[in-house]
Length: 268
Image 1 (cartoon, rainbow, N blue to C red):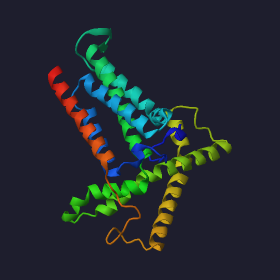
Image 2: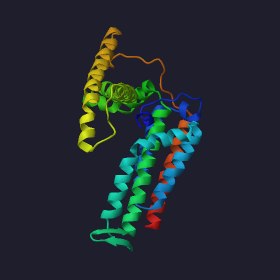
Image 3: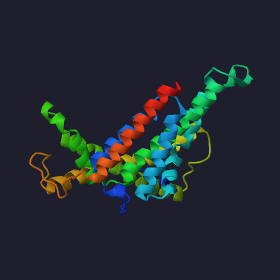
């Protein structure tokens, strides 16, 4: 299960999406998130599915990678779907047992929520799949640059966000190694009740925290040895440059969002 988590990983490829300006990719992703939760009509979901399919095809990322990114949250999807299905009332009633009922409103809300969460994970995963951590840091800093007038440490904030995102695959790999080592020593982490399984995680969490603090200290020392002193006066190896492909992609995304707004207004 841990190996299925691909959040924060970057897959270098020669595609149109990989070559896009990271700032525009972040803006397009934010518009996609707003569009996905705009209104309660199926139009929003249809537009979200169309966006994910088109972006996946343009980025040349294998669809199985998106499925792999969704797989770890299947328990969350099941719990969310059941809660919406059994606790919401409204519309035609299909099933009732004591205080539990399955209604048209609950069924529709449950399906909408599951599809939205899947599209949310798939759409945001495409951003990290097609953008390297360094470029993502520069893009976030550039978008947050107006906050520098308020004396906010924009560069440091962008750096912390990207480092946290980049360390997710590293910590997952470290957790998998610790679990394999504990199982080789006879640790049982899959049998017993919830309390026993929680206790079995203690021998994993302690070395994981120690490893995380050690890696953080090593990273801080490496940055100091390279004379890193924040963003003031710092230059970049590759400057962010926008082109026609970025303008066209942003314009198409805005048109798609506008179409969703209009259709929601007409159909509702």
